[in-house]
Every structure is written in structure tokens, then in C-alpha cells.
Image (cartoon, rainbow, N blue to C red; front, side, top):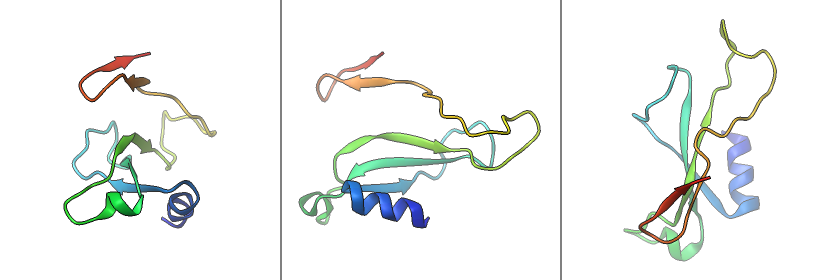
Length: 86
């Protein structure tokens, strides 16, 4: 997606589509957000994982007809072993 590549360059991130992710409709796409620093993109290194987001872009019956953004599971990480819901 062109808009995603613009944000990748502006924010120094990498967005990777996650195939096989659990979604609520077949049109929904899940993306992983990773660091795009030069050192993170070397062979064998996927870059630091920051999180995921979902695109639900297409209209369908029963869905809001306007733009909306909802956090599905807001959380943060204290360290590499603990995730805490907010």
C-alpha cells in the first residue's frame, strides 16, 4: 500500500502483512509493526516488534458507515517477558 510505505519512511517503521491472523471478517487485514532501522534489517533479524494493527476498510452490512478507530486490546510491555493490559 502506498500510504503505508510513506509512513514507513516518515516514522522509520516497517509494516508487514500477517497472513493467517485471526480476524472478524475475511476483508480485514492484520499488520505487524516493526523497527526499520538499518541494524534491525540485517539478515536473520526481523527488527524490534512494536505491535499490530488491523485494517477493516470495506463497507458491509452491519458495519459503521463512518471512520472510527477502536483499540482492541491496549497494552504495554514492562520488559521482554511481561505484557500488561491497560
